[in-house]
Image (cartoon, rainbow, N blue to C red; front, side, top):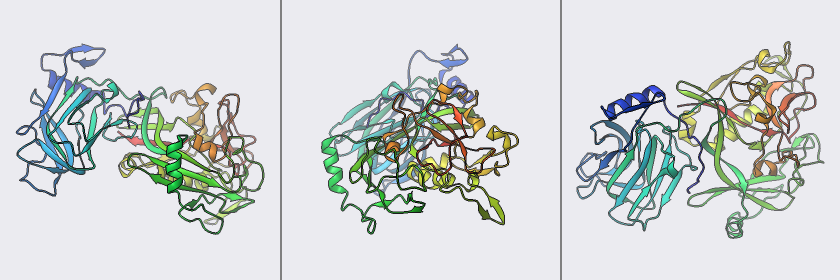
Length: 483
């Protein structure tokens, strides 16, 4: 998949590392423009039969995994990680099916990689990024029949690449990476730049051939007494959980899809069985709808040395804040319905969403954050419903964060967000005039225990009419990642 999206995928480690590497590579051939060193001509790393082998052990048919070093044409070393590499004498390296190599030191401003294969048995998938984590939104597949190809990274000029063997062993005769040594995609906060990370069902599948294939693979449709191979969402209706809406995930060789099916409409209150926005959004009972897993686009709100603060740039789902307005007793203390720490939405974000959206490698980059739930974060002082701080991987924005000029969220226009088609299938309200949806904040209202704050379809922060058991309010996840 080659997605021509000019997002900034994770930026740079830091300007100091850019300058340090640039000085080392350029020697006396550097020029300084606006504080960033740049070069007129590309530099290269050449990989040949007797040059820059990563796996250097004796021939081993089961392959080696580990780390190795390649040297640029100017004599500077760059470290790589690799998996399932064989070290033959007749070509550079052979990568067994599913194996890969990726640089773990940045190669700033890569312009292209050219790979010459010694046979046509394996396809090759090339990923690119600005830090060492990769998304299906920034990659290209080269068919097995292609014996030589050049990947230009959609002219993105990344700092990291990953090359993967698909379908068979990949015999690489030789290879060359060209780079400028200037970081052309710096990561900055303020909400003006976006990054890609994770996958979530978003756009609806409309291709008739693909729909036929997916419907053939879905198996028997579920019922309230037998979910078959589907999974019940476990949504509320009339105040209790019931099996009336299900999903199924199916993958082909390259992409993932989620099927959605329901025999009753999801009500926009957990406490009722009537009234829904699903039919207003074009989704009706007893029909199967398919949605494609696609890269999640995140706004970069802030960058602090080795980490970045991200929020989704789309309403990705529709969930209640909490299923009931009733008070509870937990640990001997009264817990109100708008207590974020004990809410349904917090557990949903850190279980359902987190485990659906991210790979193990991506989870390793998502930091556990001490989330500020103080009175000050709610926008009201006093606020008797402010809860204790939480430690979360994924969370909702607070009132203070959702109105921050530092994060680029100080205007109503900056807070207006549209929903994915998948979120609409879950019943999120969509305003027909501008296509926007409401979305939850984690901050509680100050004078009623059953209300939480949210951003409305015009980008205004409301709190006086959004009861926690509303299911039609959208979800906009936020998180911190390590760089």
